[in-house]
Image (cartoon, rainbow, N blue to C red; front, side, top):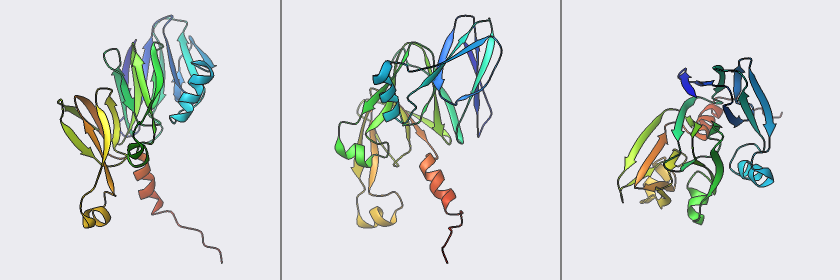
Length: 227
C-alpha cells in the first residue's frame, strides 16, 4: 500500500491499495474512493472495542474499505485545520490525544491508554483516556495545527502547555507540574499546570490545540442578548 498527503491547512491522505488490501477508518473520514473498493461498516473488536473507541473520543463503529481491484485509490480528509501524520507502530506503541484517529491498516489494534494518576487525568489537558495504537502496520492520525517532533533521551524532560501534546511513544511517561509563582499562575497565561513528558522516546507537540482554536474563534461570535 502506498500513500501520499496533499494540502497544507486542511490536508488529505490518498491511499493506493492492491487487490485484497484493506484499511479501516473513523466514520465520516472518507472523502472519495474509486470503483473497485468495497465498504463495510463494522463494530471492530466487538462491544468492548466499540466502547473503548467511544471513551477515547472516537465512534463506536468503524468503516472498513477493501480493494476488489488492483491499484485503486481512496482518500481520507482532515476534520479541522491541522496536519496528517503516518506512523508505523510495528516497533513501539503510539499514544495519542483523543480524536486523533483517522485510519489504519487491519493489523493495527485501536486500544485505550488510561492515565493512572488522578492529577494527570484532571489537569493534564488530555483527560483520563487517550488513544493507543499497537500491532503491525500503519496508523494515520490528525494533529491540531502544525507539529513539532522531539526526541527525548532517557530521563530528559520537557514541559508542555496544556492540550498541546499530540502523541508520544509508549516509552515516554506523562505527568503534570504546577506552575510556580502566584503571578505566573494567574497572569502568565499558561494556567495552573503544565504537562511534563519524560524520555526516552519521541513526542509530537501540536501548535494549535482545537480547544484553543475554538476559544479564539468564540471571541468574535456575537452573543445574543434577550431584551
